[in-house]
Structures are given as structure tokens and as C-alpha cells.
Image (cartoon, rainbow, N blue to C red; front, side, top):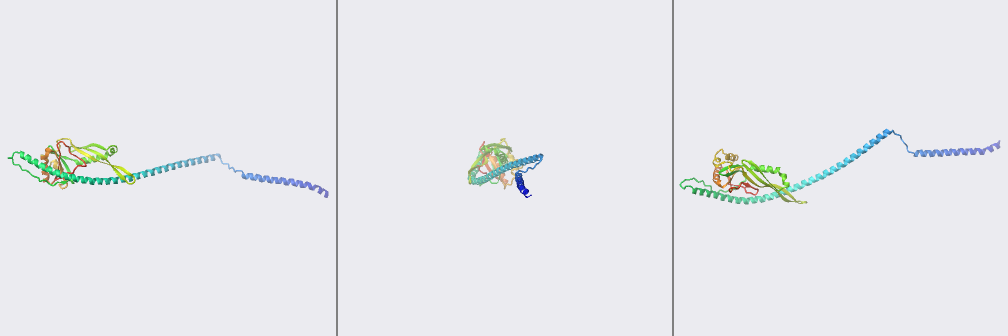
Length: 336
């Protein structure tokens, strides 16, 4: 019996070794399979319709993002352009303010020079009026001497008065062919100003413009407007040019040589002449008479009537055939 056991012992050991090897191999295979399974990606199965919907939504979102980015870019560009425009407008306003200030200073300087020039002209005008008064008196005396010496005539003598410049309101009359006609000069000048404002754009391309307004009360006014360019020093920007427009010259053109009313009618109460004059107080207005040579006698009649009514009178003698005219460089009337 013991022999049998001794004989069977080696076989059992071989079987156990085989079993142990197989178990070891299985364990190793299990470990390898586990490692591989862990490294493999996990695939989650979604329905194909849901995937397509999500992809479409994602594409729409991406398109919306792209659109918003483009819109944001346009807004940035618009804002930048607006800032540039604002800066340019501010620079323009600054330049304009400097030009206006320089122009005001220039106008003040020119105004002072013009006032000085007008004072000199006024002095000459006073002397001219004195000479005119003397001439009128001499003509009156001459006419009286030529009459019949036996005719007794009452002569009214006006001593040479001291004339003064007219700064009050003026109303103007033309004395021609012994007829007196009212000249609505203020209305005509206002119409010129209105026309100049409405036609301001034409002076961008031209320096001078001639036109006509009226007729008013039988008078038309032809005028010349001129643009003046003045160099202006602009701090920090060098020299610039400022421009302004003014009336260079005007001429009155009567539509008929027989305007107005005869002097004999004009001096009567209720005449057109007195209706115009009486609209003003004799303390507020000066009556300016533009006198042609053939109407000196009419002038004396009107002057006498005006003096009796307390109105100051200014004479503006004109040569025959010369129209009434004026300019910014003209002189003021001298009232007596």
C-alpha cells in the first residue's frame, strides 16, 4: 500500500502544476482584457434625427455669432466716422469763431477809418452847402435885377445858416421840372438787402452782381453788390480769408420825367408832399431835397414852407441829366 502511494505522488503534482498554469494564464488574460476595455472610448448612441437637429442649431448659432460680429464691426466703423465728423465740425466752428472775431475787429478798424473820412467829407459838405446858399441868393438877386425895376417885389432873405450833419431820419424828394416827387429810398434799400440775402450763394463764384428793384412811387433802384475778401490772421493756423458783401453803388431811375406834383400844389395843405412829411415830427426827421438846376425856384418855395413848419431841410444839388445815386463812401446830408 505504501508503495502504491509512493508511486502515484509524482502524477498528482504534474496535474496540479498544469491546473495552476492554466489559472495563471486565465488571470493574465482577464487583466489584459480589463486594461483594453478601460482604454477603449465609450460610444453613446444618439438618434440620428436628434444629432441632425443639434448640428443645424449649432450652425445657426455660429451664423448668428458671425452676423453679430459683422454688425459690431460696422457699428465700430460708424462710431469712428461719427467721431471724425464731430471733430471736423468742432474744428470748423473754432475756425469760424476766429474768423468772425477777426472780421469784427477788421470792421471796427474800418468803421473808425470811415468815421474819420466821413468827418472830413462832412467838413467839405458844410463848406459846399454854404457856397450853395450863396449861389442861391445870388441867383435870386440876379433874377430880381432882370425884372422890371418898377415892380415892387418882396424878397425873403435867408442868412447863411450853420449846417449840421444829418443823423436823424431822412425823407427824400426829387425836385425836377418844378415838380416834387417822393423818393421811398428806405423801402428800396430794404428790398436790396432782402435780394442780397436771397442771392448770397452766387457770391461763391462771382465777385460782383448788378440788379434792379422797384418801381416804388415811380422810382427804380439799380444797385451793384460786391464781394470783398479780407486776409485774416488765425492763431496757430496761419492766414485765412474772410469774405463779406456790401452795396458798392446805387442809382435811382425815375420811370417818368413828370413824377410827383407841381410845387404850387405841393406847398398847399393836404398835398402828397405834406402827407408824407407830416407822418414825422419836425424833431425826428430831416427833409432832403435833390434839386436840379431848373428847379432852384421850387426849392426856395419848399424850403420856406418847411422852415415855417419847423422842419429842417437839406439840399442836394444835381447837374442836369445826372441821376440820384449813392455809395457807402458818400457823404451825409447837411441840414439847415
